[in-house]
Image (cartoon, rainbow, N blue to C red; front, side):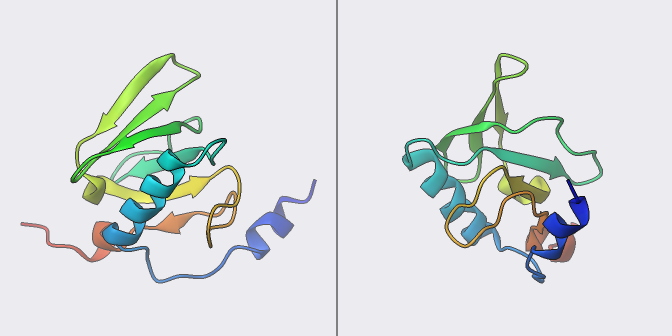
Length: 109
């Protein structure tokens, strides 16, 4: 497999807004057999595996890590620096790294 071809098909975006990320996660949570989600928090490495999106709250998301057999609750979507999906969903392509706009351009107070 040529991994170069996978990254060549990824769109170049300036950053996904928190509102767009929340809409995406809600759409995934509501869809049967939906895409799995993987993320990287600001200042951290990528999570090792993709997770099920179970529920989206006002500012956070509840994920299911099948590999570790536990739930993960991210209390604030603004802490997500990047994300990717394991399969296409809406206008998002699989295995593409999407930047979250607020992680790089938000307030640092």
